[in-house]
Amino acid sequence: MSFKGVKIVTIGGGSSYTPELIEGFIKRYHELPVRELWLVDIPEGEEKLKIVGELARRMVKKAGVPIDIHLTLDRRRALEGADFVTTQIRVGGLQARAKDERIPLKYGVIGQETNGPGGLFKGLRTIPVILDIIRDMKELCPDAWLINFTNPAGMVTEAVLRYSDHKKAVGLCNVPIGMRMGVAKLFNVDASRVHIDFAGLNHMVFGLNVYLDGNNIMDQLIDRLTSSDKAGMTMRNIADLGWEPDFLKGLKLLPCPYHRYYFQTSKMLAEELEDAKKIGTRAEVVQKLEKELFELYKDPNLNVKPPQLEKRGGAYYSDAACSLICSIYNDKRDIQTVNTRNNGAIASIPGESAVEVNCIITKEGPKPIAVGDLPVAVRGLVQQIKSFERVAAEAAVTGDYYTALVAMTINPLVPSDTIAKQILDEMLEAHKEYLPQFFKRTAAR
Image (tube, rainbow, N blue to C red):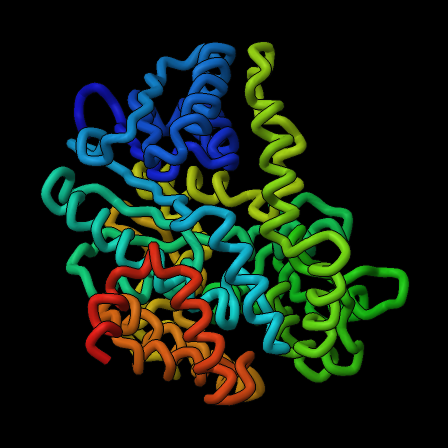
């Protein structure tokens, strides 16, 4: 790293989450001396980039730390000599997300940003862009770490591991931190006292054991989660429908909020259909929230991260990124939950595949902590989603229609090959602008 300190590049810098990232770097400045932070966006995001960038500068000034904030639409200029690159992009914006959520609902299928058909299409749009960024990094900052929290993070990490030779890449999600915070809240303790053994995939991760002050509290946790006066843990973007108490008692695992789509499919679909009629899809709700946030960000007197940001579904995302970067930089060897190469951590997942597990974070990157195999009750579902991610990543890279159809059909939220084809055809047309790899080929089909 240069004598000037650490250079970090955030691609998707005009995101509403960026103030949390700035707050995280300010908070850790004494151990992570960020001197240059480059916020990069595309021309369509220029106005948001300027608003967020000015807020970032006010935050840094108030904190009195010497972090230079640079704003640019020139990704290559920003990447030169970077030490860390974070990616928080949304190809097609919230309008594309709204299509991912609305189109499947027409066919009686869950419409969700990272699961089912919506997750497939977000991956198809995103993976080629991330691989392009990696090609630029290889040329301009070959030793930089890529910290990706663009969704679907598991599928994106899978594609990076299989279709690039960039070894320094880690996927990140806020769900494990949110689950730990949720447990702490249920027991009314500080989150630092809670430890969870996480294993699975992104948005398909389970808490195998949960500890409070080193004591396993899984039985007490399940009792609290299933008692009538306690709500189940969830996120802003996922309805809290509670769990069937006897199911959780039998499972003896802590599911993540996204498991509701697989274990409560019909209830979640009914909830989505109702919401779509009354208040709009989650993307449409978020569009309103974003407008409010950016109005707040424009205030020249605002020089801290506003609390309203937590209304977005991704609270703790950026804090997780700052913690990860800080631990790699300082070789902290603490335990964090990230998406990385399995390397035998989960016995029934291929060693070269991406998994979401607890890792020891070192200057060489994450070292996965082996858990053996997953309990048989959830092993098959995790393997099925891993198969889906692999086939979907292949479709994103090749632009092959038939591979995309297989990916759509084998997803457990899609009921049949016929419906899969109908949804695929409509969504390909709806997202044509962002899927050039398919339209070079479908013309000849």
